[in-house]
Amino acid sequence: MSVQELEKIFRDKIEAEIKIEAKDWMPDAYRKTNIRQISQHAHSEIVGMLPEGNWISRAPSLKRKAILLAKVQDEAGHGLYLYSACETLGISREETINDLHSGKAKYSSIFNYPTLTWADIGAIGWLVDGAAIMNQVMLTRTSYGPYARAMVRICKEESFHQRQGFESLLVLSKGTKEQREMCQDAINRWWWPALMMFGPKDTESANSDQSMKWKIKRKSNDELRQNFVDMIAEQVKILGMTLPDDQLRWDEKRRHYDFGEIDWNEFWNVVKGNGPCNKQRLDARKKAWEEGEWVREAATAYAEKRKTPQTPKGALEAA
Ligand code: FAQ
Image (cartoon, rainbow, N blue to C red; front, side):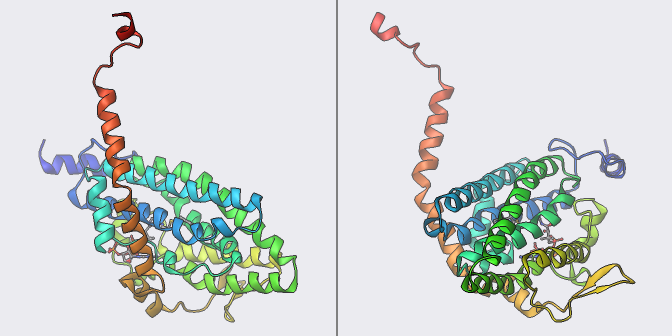
């Protein structure tokens, strides 16, 4: 078949909402865009374990510790599904990890902020997982099959994460004066970085147009950000807390909340590697990769061993 014919089959599938699968022909640029987005998403999941991991040993009770442990393990699982989905596009795990370590590949800006108090763990669950779900629910309908299917399971787990974060803040919001202040302080610090998770404004988003045409993205950065603001502006009332934005108000005509301007200098600064924790996060990932080499070697050796036929159990004794 000619490239033109293959391209037509690809376009028709996208048009008809038929998923593109790993062995299907796809334009090189579609493959590359998916590799870029899925690998960066995977990196975000595993780098995202670090700020939360910081609080596992200091959780205020056994119950909170068990919940946080389970959540952090979930994030590792999400990384695994996503790296696997990425590998179906023909790139090795080593290559994607190298791109993270060399700084070629990005990961979500949000994980370059520090977790200073226990309330930050609640704020991450409520705001960061909340923003992640808002974006990922649309990705369950993304055009690349393995990515869409990974997203279904991830979204289920993320919605548990968001609820536990909200519940944790709800407890603090009903606590002592210090606990209430800690809760408000965490919301103040995580609010704007959470809004930045949706990426640059649509007018500045280099990849959006093409990704929307290919149905990799189904909603724009600004549309998702607005949906998130509308949801959180209502939920924060239940906590009896406020969002740190004096321009936040309901617009009856638009049927949406208006909100203030994001500090885009801060956003790009963090994306370019100059956020408060960028160096710390990358160093931690590189160290984990180096120190985990013996585990990878042992796992490979074990897999090899299982491939070769084993002597039946008891055969040696009988001989
Ligand atoms: N941080 O043209 P666009 C989570 C980059 S998972 C850093 O608009 P696109 C779970 C972008 O890559 C959170 N870089 O890009 C969890 C591009 O640069 P490139 C992660 C950013 O791809 C919770 C450039 O700016 N979720 O949180 C950011 O069309 C709690 C221009 O931007 C995903 O990755 C940013 N915030 O739209 C874990 C979801 N925003 O690549 C632990 C999948 C933009 O050309 C604890 N990804 N950039 O060099 C997406 O949906 C999209 O990639 C967007 C960006 C919406 C993030």
